[in-house]
Length: 272
Image 1: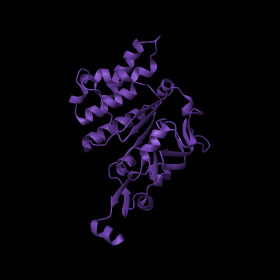
Image 2: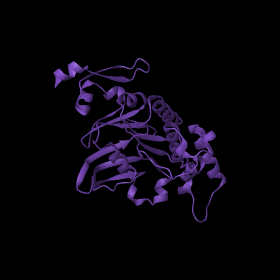
Image 3: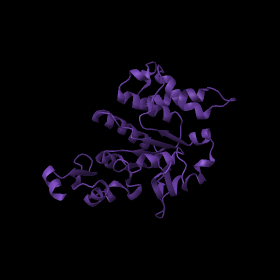
């Protein structure tokens, strides 16, 4: 950031996103800060995953535009966009019997063509992605035999193998227990700390989002209510307006980041 201006390769400009006749997001503007770990939070069905799919060109805007490096994402070919931006969707499924190594290697598809098949560069990219995610020793295991946390690391390794500067993760901690959630988020933080990638993730846990995000985007009913560093925007009023709950926001005793403490059962009854 220089002179108060945010550098942003990925933008949504007056975007409206819809599924057939149902509009989920209307006239939304977003600039993803370059080099950030941006986390999108909000209640169920507020448009978080729809926004991520729109940024990744999985949904064509009904109005407005999503741009990457100054060009509409729709102007890129499939392999060209996949060399710039990687998306890990919710609950991805692997083919039966596929090994960890083979699945991670699929991340190199955007870099191959009829004239350029598997190369030493592909070999290095896959090896580095597996080492970064700690799954090298699982290379010959079938993905279907792994634990939930291991599988999620393998999927992240696959998108890392794409070697894109932008990485979008849709609810990467869903269905994982707390230890595996922290394991995956620590991995994401390590990837961000490397300084080469911008990460955008959808998370449900607001306290985890505050711990890990450098830029927080709070959504409700298809619009952005607030965005910025968690310490600057998260307070009881914001949590109340976004999630509809009464709470206190106190410093996390471990990290100093905002920590949301919901009001007790009786206090919540009174507030209703």
